[in-house]
Image (cartoon, rainbow, N blue to C red; front, side, top):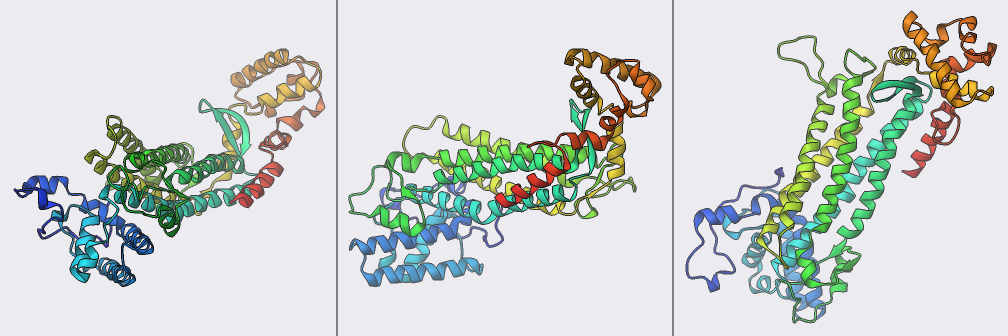
Length: 469
């Protein structure tokens, strides 16, 4: 979960809040309570928030223009130090906020001490987390989600006529097209995309200005700061502003739904790539071998994604448990919000990227899929529909086809392999044209309506899905 730009926390430094204390913090407690090891990844957001806050303080006369410019220049230098790996993080300074503030004061003097006017670490960290999550949604997660959707849609277009068996209860049900199946996966991701857009609306609300819990006596301009940072609006209540983590829980809930969908994809790909199915090849780049069995090609990527789903579900449970017993307003418990959130962000981003790469290179084995569709009497429903169209009540048609299937089971033949006289023995409504509905191609082509598996509908649906991206 570490960032390559993050440096190991070192050196002991005096804390900026020690005035009230007569004894130093216990060394173990200091290390136990420090968050700088993981929250330093928010340095860009912390600096952006401080720049906006400095501009606002200058606009209301708390800082002079010279002090504002000195702060902004100093923060830019600190950001460059962090990016270049020269910044020395200190556990004694607890977190990313105090580390940056101390370094700023060391660089520019008293002007740096004025930056914290009208704010608290409580509203500062709440703001940073929202900024960080918003940046990840916008710059990493959404693009990768769209890339995976595009890979599925393009695969659906290419394989709009490739026949495979559709299942219920993992038993052969009716023939469908592979393209139709890929678009079913895309429908799940499209809902996930829409939910993420909705989630972002509640992420993009600014706590800054709530201060510790009650607001501040300074005449701050929260609208100014919100605009500078790209928030839709400031939060409406200072108590809620510093203590709310609903937005993080909502994101984790969203991530859990996404990974649940991807785990379902993974389960199918694992089955399809097995020697028992042998329908797809995932590509050597996305599989590994065995240290003892030279013939093995293991579908590690789908298996890992399936496994990481439990990790994301656990993060959601952790966050709910962290928040469930907290009185208003801020409590130190909230320090525990970051690691499950950060880990989930990293996990989701990685899963989406590797899946988008893998699906763009998947190879199908259409002959094996077609052969599988011929097993299990997948056109039985088509025969029942044929009888209904010829005047047989559906329940009677259901019984007729059941008897025909029983003969097929007994003689090890598909319905399409029986001769006309055998079929007519089950019902006088069966005519010479019955074999048109018993073929796999005839079955899928007959479902030519919105949402159906007919190749024409699949191609049209893929075009619309691509346009929606």
